[in-house]
Length: 409
Ligand code: HGY
Ligand code: MN
Ligand code: MN
Image (cartoon, rainbow, N blue to C red; front, side, top):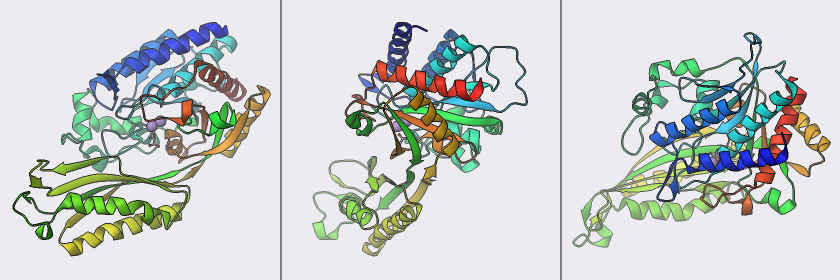
């Protein structure tokens, strides 16, 4: 395919998908919503446009499979893709760039060299971000391990369970285990770096060796609702005041254990939420990450200890460790394979680690998994300003095509 044609396709596909889920300038595509459905229907049409067969599994992961007649029944499949959902007010490249790169790399390589010896499937995974449910990687975990009953019962901010949301979106929660697979040869993902390193160093490809561990706690601090005007300051059980003192201390709690860890309170809700009522309940999330599992464990203990001090002041404290993804080393053979291809193409590249979590770390639990980064402007992500150039995306298509060619033809 002439480069011009590829660039035009990249431009069109990124922009079309980027339009889906935009409301008053805010982009949010989360699982089992009409925005999610629209994105999946669009991506299926792009799959068909690239000459592949579009389908969905029992939890809403979208696949692009080979049309040809070769019987691949007993052959393990190569999966290449990323996720189709976004965070709230997210960008047009996180996840989206990876599914488009995967689709174009597969279709372009098949057009050039015919059917592969090892079947390849493009995949757009559902609900990687966990922006609706306090559970990330829903789609990839459904494939790798299956979804558990307690996970299906988790509820969103409106009290709608994952199970109900699936039903309302046309999926049967009783079928979720049908999404689980054993026939996977390997998983490849290209993703924007979501950090500044590649851009700053002038590298075009990041070959990921290790992915950060992520622990995610949901916290509920329960005090007592009171009248804001008549309750003396020293006679309150103000849950928001207690929460904010804890939050102010969180960086210090974490830094005592690891100087490379991150800790973020990204979501907070106050009940009853009236300006003249002392806040009874404060609910918030803590996302903390590190490359070292012992440090993650110690941070978890230190955070819970800090929160439990509030009980001595009369507060009730509930903590739920909703996610505990351990740091993961990616497959060394695939890292070396990617490195050979990138070197053959004469591209500036570097090996690096990922501070962000990715579906590749879920696949890596059971299958050889590989993750490549491309630069993104100013390293910004999880923001509408997120940007990756068509040129860098085209380079990733060429690299992924080279990797698939070496592996499967
Ligand atoms: O949070 C993350 O690291 C990823 O964007 N889900
Ligand atoms: Mn993300
Ligand atoms: Mn992502």
